[in-house]
Image 1 (cartoon, rainbow, N blue to C red):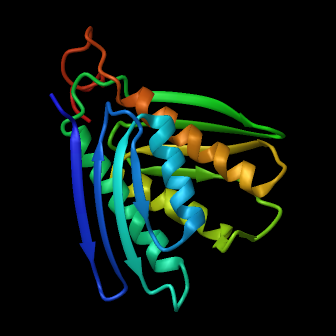
Image 2: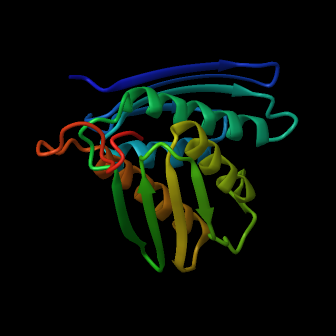
Length: 195
C-alpha cells in the first residue's frame, strides 16, 4: 500500500502545494522562494526517504513569516494524510544527530497529540537570507497539523547552519523510523486501542 498525502493551502498571503510519499527514496523537488528553507526541506526528505514535492509562493516582500508558517502547516497536513489511521506503525523514534561540531537530539511521537518543544539557539539570526527565529515556527506548525509530538534539543552548539541542518536531518530520520510498519502490531500503537 502506497502511503501518500497531498495538501494545498491558498490564502491572500500564500499559495502552497505539497505532495508527500512515505517509504520513498528521498527524492525532493522543493521551491519556496527561500533558498535556505528549500535546503532544509530537501534534507528532511533525503534523510527521511520521503518523496516530496513542494511549491510555495508567499508574500516575501512583507517577510518570510507567512510562507514559513503555512509551509509547516501544509507539510504536517500532508504527513497526516499519508499516515492515515496510523495502524501498525512504530509510533515513537528518537535520534541524536551530529553535524560537525553541532549535536542535536530529535524525538517524535506520531500518537496523534500535537506537542512541540524546542531549544535550539543559533548564534546568528540570519543564515543565508533565512531568519532563524522562524525555524521553531515552521516545526511547531508541522507538529500541530501532523498531529505529532516533537522535541528538538540542542546538545552542542556551533555554526548555525550546521545546527539547523542537524535538526532537519534528525526530523527526517525520526519521521521515517516512527512511521515504519511493525508486522507484529495489529491496530493502532496504543494500550487504549485508539489514538
